Image (cartoon, helix red, strand yellow):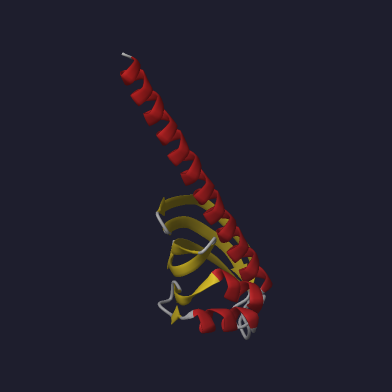
Length: 144
């Protein structure tokens, strides 16, 4: 009886520890997503470079694919310029050192040489943990 209680107690502690660790990682990924949103709004090249993996593949809803250098350049130069980004219906799933994030993005843009526009996108992002930090590895958007 005592052995059974001890086993149950240890199992409960293990589950609680795993849940705490999982929730901590989810919060860290959510923080990284918020930092990405702010960097995209500001167009700050240093912040954009810091949040993106060197191996980034960034897919736009129109089919354009960018690597990290192009992703940073178009936002930092104002070629692509977000004036508002609102995220909703976000889900985060952490699988070891990989996280899958889905959300809806509604925003406003005022790109160089273009009239202001509204965007309404679904987004799937893949984040990879590098050391203590979560880095954007891949992103694909689609029109909603």
